[in-house]
Image (tube, rainbow, N blue to C red; front, top):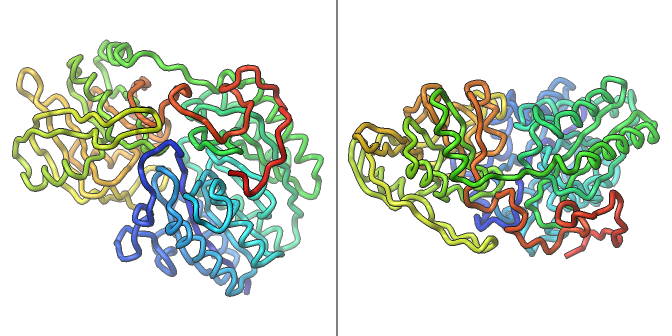
Length: 519
């Protein structure tokens, strides 16, 4: 019986984010919703719509003896603290060192750590994989990666099979894990000989332009799918994560062929050339916030989704900026629900006051954002506490299906309109959470299908649960460290030239050799 190590270590790191990433953000082992280890991993993730769920399904079907050392996942934020990284990576490495025949890893591909780890802090996944390769040089390693992965040489050189998500929102995490796992099982059986080709183009694509249902990413993904239908083992387009100021950030492609490197390279180059031809389409231009809200006000049917995308927690936002909410109130939109303002202190105040109590709060604006030169700006509001919960419910949307949401202690504040009745309901949470499931509202007693406007601190993931009910979506250029305005950020490490920071960037610039110890 083959022995398999199956684990997860996921984090998308926004190097401009002031939100810290300690081990507690991944959860504590003693916490019911903390980072699971050992058998708890299988109990938590078997049968779920996750990459590790797909790996577990494949390994179990193949009759493997499964070891699950850790399954760590944290919402995007600033660099991962060294202690947290060591906790997860040590658990995985120790399990491999104890002996195994194959390793399946559910990773993100855009993890950056603080200084102090044994390896490259700008390449958390590559450092882990290189360490595993040093422990077990011949070990077959299969990984699944997020569509927003920043692929590095260390990642490519130290794994055997790599498959990325083909959807954003990521409703195919389970499929990607299963795909990578099945390729590995076939490799172990001697049925295929996977060879990988990897390449990238100097493009810092905007996340708002990476939806799989949108141009230009949608057609690129379809080309990758066509290549797979014609016999390629896998083709993955990675938009990259542009808010990671590291040398290798940006768009890339990984293809896998059965023993035919030239076939993998041909599809890789075709996809990269098409991405480069569409580089201008990968940029997003915002309109003034007041104009967006005024445009939304013209629509009386709903729900209209108002995207507070500059403060998207799933890209590392503080989730507590108030510019969009303030403009909604200033222009008098009614029948509005907001998800969510991260403000643990406000939740404590509302909990102490109790349901039905009216109180005045300085809501949000607790975090400064030095990377963009902004300080927190709370908004003073008066409202009635409408609901209080522990923030836990089961995800039913395909993205993460079967896992448990963990918003932390949460509450709903009902703001009175100018004529008396409630017009704006604000969800306030204690743990950063991007809304992608209707339960994010329903768990607090709000029926989102009945609202005229839904203000969501999101970019694209909201579509996993809200796409089917939305009449329209309007991007609102608020304040935050996930803004699509590159002028707000000081890029110091990313390789240059790169588009659009350098408009005249050639398709294949000559860069210095890339080093694992680049700082």
